[in-house]
Image 1 (cartoon, rainbow, N blue to C red):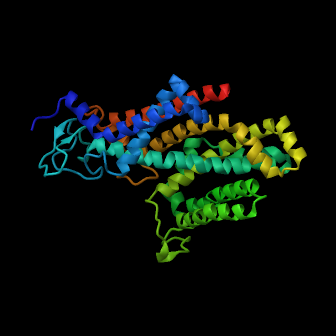
Image 2 (image 1 turned 60 degrees about the horizontal axis):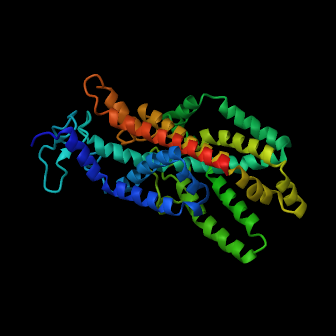
Length: 396
C-alpha cells in the first residue's frame, strides 16, 4: 500500500474522532438552547472567547473519555510494530491483520509506537489528573483559607507562614523533588496523601452539617451518602500493598497505576498554598459586607457564614483561577513527563511523548509536534475559558 496523502490523513483523523464531534455538537446545542437556565455556565455562550476556549477544552475532555473507552484509538499506544520505527505520517502498517487499522496516521516514534494513539491516550492521563488534583487542592485551600481569613489571629498567622514557606521554594524544583525516586522510596508521598486526602472528607462533612443542621434525618442521610463512599476511597487510595501503609492486605481493590498517586499528591501539595492565599484574601474582603453582618445578627454559626454566605460570593474569582490552575497543572505534568519523572517511562502522557520525539527532532519532526500541539491547545483553551468566565462573572 502507498502512504496516505495529507488530505487522506486529516480525513482519517476526522473519521476516527466522529464520536468526539457528535458529543461536541450535542453539548453546544443543548447548552445554547438552555443557556438562560444555566447561570454563569449559560452566560459563557454569550462570549465568543469563552466559547472558543470551552470548545478546545471539551474537545480534549471527550477525547479523553472516548480514548479510555477505546472508541477512537487506532492502535495500542504501548505496542511496538516491527518496521514502523520513525515512519512518517500516513505510513501503511506492515503485516496488518484483519481488524487492524491499516495506517499510522501520525507516524511512528523511535520505538515504533503509533503517535496518534499515544496523543489520544495522553489526553486521558491529563484530564484524569489535572482537574481532579486541582479540585482536591481547592478543597484543602478552602477548608483552611476560610477560617484563616474569617477568624484571623494566631491561626491565620500560623497557616499563612506555612503557606509562604511552601511558596518560597521554586515550584518546578519543589515538584521535581517530590517525585524523585529517592523521596518516593521514603514513603513521604503516602504520608502526605493521608493528610491531604482527609480534607475532602472534612469539607463535605462541614458543608452538609451546616446546611442541614435543622433537619436531622436528612442530615444523617446525606452525611452517610457522601462520607461512607468517600471514606472507603480514602482508605483504599492511601493503602499500598508491600509498604508501611498496608492496612487492607489482599482486600485492597483499588491500586492506582505506578506514579499516578505520587504525581497527584505533588500537584495537590504544590497548588494548595496558593489557593489558601486566594481564599483567605477573598474572605478578609467579603466578611466586611452587610449580608455577612446580617447572617451574624440572625445567629448563624461561623462555618455556615463561611460556606453559605462568603464562599458563594467569591465564586467568580475562584472559578476563573480554577481554570487557570488546571492549565498550570497541565504544564507541570508535561514538564514532569518530559524529564521522565512521576509516571512510568512507557506512559503515553504528552510530556514523555515530546521527550521521546525531541531526541531526533533535527531529522524527524512528526513524533514531537502532535503532543506539543495537543498540550498547547488544551492550555490555550483553559486560558480562553478563564477569560470568558472572568468577563461574564464581572457582569453578574
